[in-house]
Length: 417
Ligand SMILES: Cc1cc2nc3c(=O)[nH]c(=O)nc-3n(C[C@H](O)[C@H](O)[C@H](O)COP(=O)(O)OP(=O)(O)OC[C@H]3O[C@@H](n4cnc5c(N)ncnc54)[C@H](O)[C@@H]3O)c2cc1C
Image (tube, rainbow, N blue to C red; front, side, top):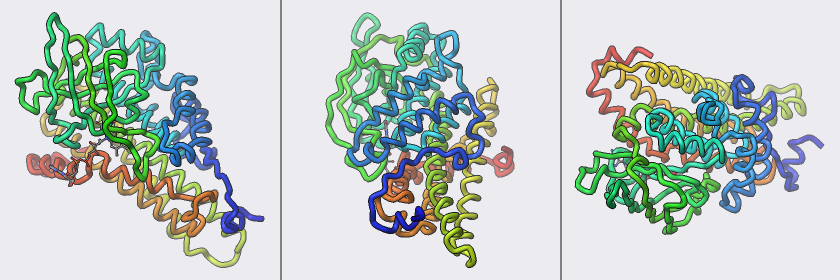
């Protein structure tokens, strides 16, 4: 019986979507973390359907990340990490995205927090010690930027750092979404610098699990990314002033958090779309073998999907170059900074929409075998997970920001890479 016959027979076939050597996105195997990520992806793929069905934390995949030392990989070697680059982490995200979207998203979100510490807090002994602990114990870091009545506007906070005598502070934040908050060893939260500071005068603060109480206030019964367990919490914490980053959050967001988020999210979304493409490719080839004479109408779709995947990866590679150039240069002109920000914004909006287009092509190629659950070609999870992409910092909000950049910019300066 061919794979397609078994898919159409209605028999439940438990597909294990391992990242196959010929189905890996181009470039896999070239980066420092790829082998470890492939080993973790094999574990993640086995549990991806259960994680999605039960909306549960992908503990097997995260344990495997710890075993392969992937969580502390970006920490410098002298602090016990591997000094892995953003490019290597992006490649790992793409490989993990092939296997389990939620595990890949958790990995990406964790690394976004690590890179913020690396690029903006290494001058503070407390944060150097913190990063050493991340590497030693493979701590998992979460993020609390969203806030009630502020929504997805990263650059506004309602809560504030409240001085509590002798260099101590307390923080009380109503967080509508903290992915895997219940499983994190530390959380990086935004807040106003002080109770009398305006909403835009924000800082980033690292708070530790042992100093924090999270009271669950909403669940996470969503149609996709179910394993991220992105529940709402009342966050109450205390700490010391050295846990507050020494630079304003606006600078951290612009130079690091937004570019790293858009690059790593785009990488894992490309991984998800790439897995859908592999399933369609297998279906297409099996179909051609079963009916060797007639040309398949799926031919133009598979070619179009491949072109879109290549364009997505090309955009990520270009954004990685832009980010590396910006990180290496201490002085950037205002127009260069604006041009880079526009490119990083459109990376996110482009990849989040295009990934869904690739999956739609794959659905049209595989037909009912994609629509049914439990076939080797089922694509329900891919579509549902990818629908979070345009919402995760709403594309409309990002487009409005890009439009503001364009208004402030003379046309010629945006044409440079
Ligand atoms: C899988 C997943 C995991 C997440 N994990 C976390 C996490 O760990 N930590 C965290 O803090 N957050 C997390 N979030 C939340 C996320 O990052 C955003 O905060 C959230 O997606 C924004 O939610 P929203 O659509 O309700 O808000 P908004 O983006 O505030 O609301 C969207 C609405 O605002 C409108 N809008 C667009 N532009 C503007 C504008 N300029 N001004 C006013 N309104 C505008 C839109 O048209 C839309 O109607 C996660 C989200 C997802 C999907």
